[in-house]
Length: 362
Ligand code: ATP
Ligand code: MG
Image 1 (cartoon, rainbow, N blue to C red):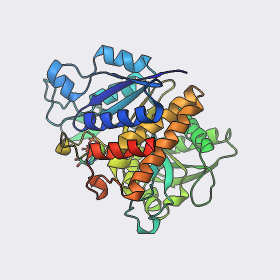
Image 2 (image 1 turned 90 degrees about the vertical axis):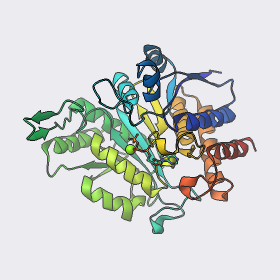
Image 3 (image 1 turned 180 degrees about the horizontal axis):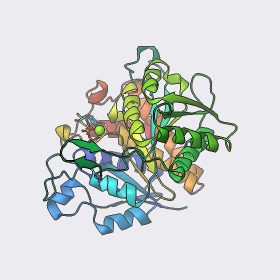
Image 4 (image 1 turned 90 degrees about the horizontal axis):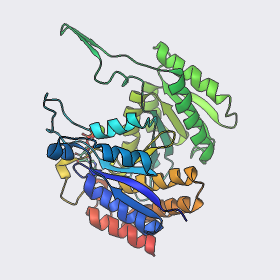
């Protein structure tokens, strides 16, 4: 049986704490003979020490091993000599150098977690936001134009290739899921502003073209402003939402807030043959080093990683382990055995980790 080798970057802030937790849970679920974590350095703290954000040896490990698990990157106040923030440069460099074009953010309300949407406590929120990760309105990142200190502009880039691949990813994902909670129907909702901007109309047209190859999956459309209302009023309608880079960024944070917040929301950034997994939250420097961060987002990201590896390597034993991790997290929260502070409980990061591991071992 294959031993999966995971390039692991703890990173900044709460990164090391939540990464340690995910490692313990993944090892408990799979056994140490099936998964090996190779710790590699990088990020803002590492830059402070060495002057390097992403050492070449770290990049090589991320490129050559089976997947990447990441804690969090970025620490306010750490700057390059020209005064600009290092921020999450590590993460961005990996995203672009490995062309991780699909950012998937599952939005699922777990049993035992109270949603701020009263009507949906107890279930009914289970969809995935698929965010295009390499172009859109963030394409000119750092290269926008400032004209005589009077005007600034950035460019919204939508390419055929970029949209075809993100749309195919979204339809393919919808095909592999159980459909929306309300009606069990598989569908992709295209989130855009096709009524205002030509680039978004092009995005929608290409999603339509790709849809022709997925006749078993439905399609509908929502403008980016209207979708925020639907996400609050009828989140059970959604199965998979596909969106341009900035819209996807914004609506996935909104979605996370409806199911318990950033500390519970996982994410995966997927390319052709590479993928990086991390919690949807940042490095949360305000609570770093205090053992109070919730490890749940990173643990669930680890489960997402196992599902991706299962498909890449046609290995159902990994899907089984991912199912067990998801169930263990849900059980710990539902029974109230251990609840992290951001969900209203008192459990520390290590107590949460131990509770999940105990449930897995039972
Ligand atoms: P980034 O710019 O990297 O997205 P951010 O400024 O959006 O970072 P986050 O680090 O995502 O900020 O977190 C915002 C706040 O939410 C944190 O300051 C922290 O209080 C809380 N938070 C984030 N992640 C967690 C977690 N895993 N557990 C508990 N609280 C968290
Ligand atoms: Mg943020």
